[in-house]
Image (cartoon, rainbow, N blue to C red):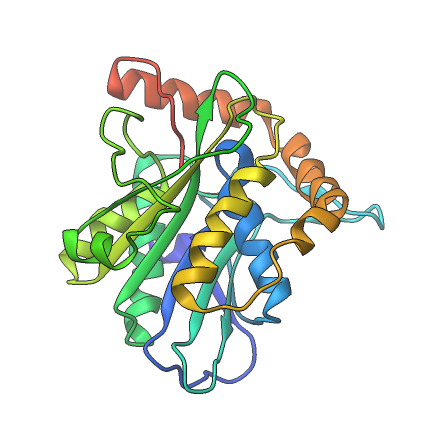
Length: 266
């Protein structure tokens, strides 16, 4: 582990959390996971706990509204629920793009999950389609059948095999690596349009319905429709600014590794 490549900054005191569920939503196809988690962070008024920066993140900075630059960061938030399970949420501008860094990052994230005695990880992402889906389907896969049974509902299909290729990136690695630590993990993937500039808000909304029902979040999902413009502006600005060269390098690595087209990037 190249510890000097990573910097984790803590905000405030370490909270005592009750059996927290960890939810990941980093950029990917349609930014489905990021849209869902960013909405959750605002809706439940989660507090910032950690900020992660790394030499392994894309070699670029973002220009903000004040015409100042910002390094790409990944952040972890938490929310305490009286009498209910607490929540940890992972969001960010980017995710590591090479294999070693993705493994290192995922292991660091799982270290944090275990630090708070978390026993369950949820990752979110999109499945890229050739056309815009009218009503996106949500699929799930996991590292145990037990957790799939717990999240089974009429809102989710567990028939993912054959629908996508490998789940590449942090969304997939967290599931695989969590099983080595006896942590149950499940991924919810919503259909979305596969164009790199498309924002999969409809897919994010369908995933939020699943989380709201199963985790008793009591969130107003319809707010997402009203906040679409603000979300689009914020995310698309950063999406456009990310280096095209970095994206192409990542894609070529993946295609070379798997020997065929990669149709899903977590």
